[in-house]
Amino acid sequence: MHPALSVIVFTTFSGMGYGLFIWMCANIIIGTPPFREEIIFGTSMSFILVTIGLLSSTAHLGHPERAWRAFSQWRTSWLSREGIMSILTFGPIIFIGGETYLTLGLGFLMMPAALLGMLGAVLTLYTTSMIYASLKAIPAWHNKWVITGFQVYALSSGGVAYIMIAGWQHYQIVMYLMIVALIVKIMTWIYIDRNRGQYKRESALGLSDFGKAKPFEPAHSQKNYLQREMGYELGSVCRTVMRWLALGGGFIMPAALLYVGFPLSPIIVVICLAGMMAERWLFFAEAEHVVRLYYDKDEV
Amino acid sequence: MTCLPDKTEKKLGLLIDLDICVGCHACAVNCKEWNTSGITGPMEDIKPYGDDPSGVWYNRIHSYEFKKPGEADRTVYFPKSCLHCEDAPCVTVCPTGASLKRSEDGIVLVNPDVCIGCKLCSWACPYGAREYDTSGGVMQKCTLCVDKIYDETIPEERRVPSCVSTCPAGARHFGDFADPESKVSKLAAANDARDLFPEMETKPINQYLPPRKRQIHKEKSLNHKVSNVKDALLRWAKLDFTG
Image (cartoon, rainbow over all chains, first blue to last red; front, side):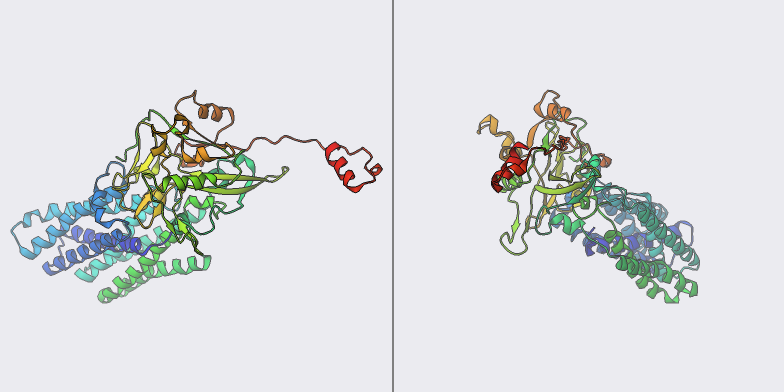
């Protein structure tokens, strides 16, 4: 799939934003609440990251002014569900930040808001992952690793953002989570590498019993929308380089820097975000759509 | 509404005979001709006479060479358009309700006034049936010429999709697959009709008839005496027509 910057920014930024918010809510719930300034800064940062992500995703649309219509089809569409959950989750983010800043005397609602906020963030991440995981036509996405990955990467990248803000003493938890995230990513790659080639051109043509098919005259002289959107061919060298960048920036370096100590945390956040963008670039660039069987691929 | 109907009254669709198709692209051209001024048109054409033309087509004619050990190679022309699937994944992913499957005849359509151009439907379709209109910012696809097949102002025999009426070889048939007595249902049943990409579990309505079994010609022994014919041209003629 064509790795469009708008969707890469959308999923990495909002992922980090929700992850950060989940850590903040968790600390409020377990009774190690961050300081007032930290909550204000943290919720603001969550709000900004999520908003950048969502606005960026609308840049992908042909008619952004009609985006409000996307909230209507929650019965069947994961994209619609994601839209609704992301809007609902703004409620707890704004409430926790606003109440802390303005001290309106609604402090007794902090705990339920943190619980709802955590639930909302987890469900938003889940619905986002299901937009991709529900697509049978893209085998690299149509699996449980994608669903697990979106949750884990949000928590690991959001975790370093939380440490930057709250200087959390139990930061080793995030360090171990980085290692878990690294393993999940490697397992995902093993899964997609092993499952490459399960669909054949002959089956796409409904002519599996006619021998081996190869394209003869092309259907059109120039690339069409399908090839521009879904025909991205990732070279093997590029794949290897990007995989190392993703692993190094997204997980290994943040984990190593956390091991050294958190004074470096703003740098960790930048490195982690850059690594996650490499990871998300690969998420798209590596995913082969089965429509390519009608064009240049013998198998997907 | 993006919920798929449990059952459609009719299952209108195409039966495409790969044994007959000659790959002339007339169906694709006439499709564009009709639909660019139809209800979902115009169909964009960017630099149509330039070096790098691009645009939207609802129908594309691929071709493939099949090789099977022990058999002569075979060329198959392969027209591909929306299959109007019963379990259309493009419809259920749509966040706005712009994509829909009609309960009366099963036709899958896009409402261009509601589409936000998120392109997710094109990602969900395994067949590449949908193409994005960059100038209109919306997704476009085959309508089965819905503005032609129900038009009572044209003679009844012409109320078929443009690709069907224009096919010079008679490779394309249109009808109701829900009616077992329809021409398309009978042809499909008699000729081993195929679904494209059955693993995708989309239950396509459109069906494809595979190339038929080849007739095996026994090699004829050339035991007549060609050398007796003096004239070279006649020698060839004798070989070819009497051999």
